[in-house]
Length: 254
Image (tube, rainbow, N blue to C red; front, side, top):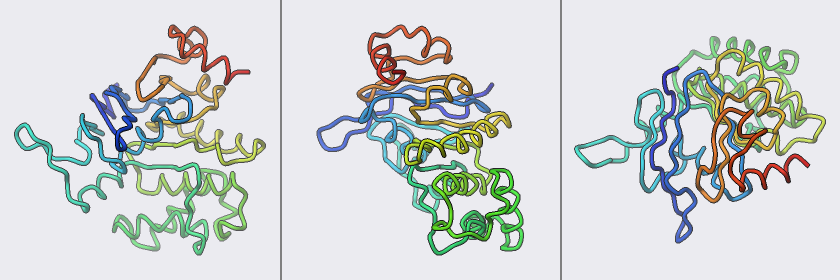
């Protein structure tokens, strides 16, 4: 499989605190990469750097062969203008842990909004496609409901449908089940499983070890801003080589 995401020597600091220390990662197209790690390890910062919600201090990120956030001019990287960056972000879906739905819009209009706003589809076409996507995540009967009328799991499934609405090349998930009650986690993971089966390229930050074992092509363990270990789930989860990975998994699995 060809590389969908190439992350090379990425560094990011907030003040004197370096959050990412020279991260290198390749994500093949059509694959699922699960990122594990303790709180504060840089997982969310790494995701946000991939679509330039966070500017990197050093290094490069490319998605589908396109340099994200910058244009190379000789030996220098010049940051792109906001319009160009927004165009790039439209090709990278992002599902946050806190849903971030528009409270004044129905589920249908939450999903249809971005294709209309970006000029990708006319309103009637966008709404028809939104209905298709809501059906894909099991919410065809909740199209006219407002976020306050939906459970947390349903809101997150609407957020996933919204991420799919622009037909992204890649979808990033930042702990998509962490804000949910335990009994609602399964319905969201079922949608992620279906996306994986359909060949959607995904990078998922999560502590759901069972999901990682079942669905991931690659598991990455990130600690203190460095990739400590990466490989297929049966290697990283069942036979970790690094003591830090072993210590983390022993706590998560118990």
